[in-house]
Length: 432
Image (cartoon, rainbow, N blue to C red; front, side, top):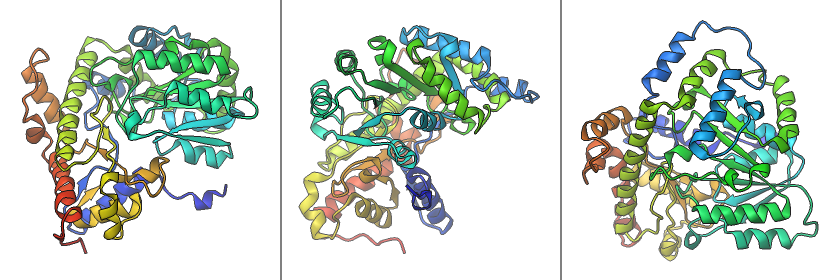
């Protein structure tokens, strides 16, 4: 594949487009970029300040103290036995994912909808990709029987393959139950496929009930995590991959490529990350507040969409909704909307709501789906309010309207657009 044809990542592109429209004087509701709204916890920020003087190159695989902290984190939080020697630190999990696909020689299996980066990275490298389409009625999840059928129907069932499993999911906000993970792990074992378990949103499971599939398939699972989501430090660019001993050869291969590309992650960031991954009781409380704030705002957002008859799953984790507008397909076609890309473009022009089309997440272009990131609110103020209320009390029903008014306004505009623009002849005044 020629990288000249690649283009900018869709999440970054919609953010730039939104900012341009705002600069032109338009009122834009930004539901496009999936960035944590919460501030980095103060003790982690202080650790960064305290280590600003760290200037030396660190080992390619990462600061030893950080690798130990990451291993302990997964041991305590996920009940998975990780050797610090099998942890590698990278400048964001996105870069580590790219190096994994570059180093691994097998086919990539991607359940769709999928994070926007999986498929483009595989295309850049030239890997064979098998996209497995899930459905709304399947909660956008790949089920064990479906995975088994896919693997069994291939000519060479023993060839190397890597399954990308992302949960809580981007773009859908769903997750898997423990029993589902056990069954998927069993299928993966039977067919000898590896799993990249993208658990970057693991600590943002809204009920704090995240389970790692590595518990059930430790020898074949790589756990991906980092600071971007649960720690609110997306701009710090620090990701982690944790390997089983059986796949140390693969980690060493990634480290070799890393030594010829990024060399090592920023030293001050790595020292500060030790504090984050130590996950003391104060950071744990911070994360619990983040979980329930996102749960409250996400559920209110979903309920608002359902009023208009839009099909959407209740959020279980992360900070996304993936509504399906297919029930209105005939009316959309009457208005010359025949793809998710045209749909979100019209939505932006006619309501000011910016979001991403389903096609960006590996969905068929004619499927009318979109990703909504419900994070355009002041996370610091929401955290302060949640702290004052206390974890022993529920957040009030109007919490979202009080602390995420733009998010809820955007959801109401989408519902209104469906009710008035799609279901009737009423026209909005489009953005010029």
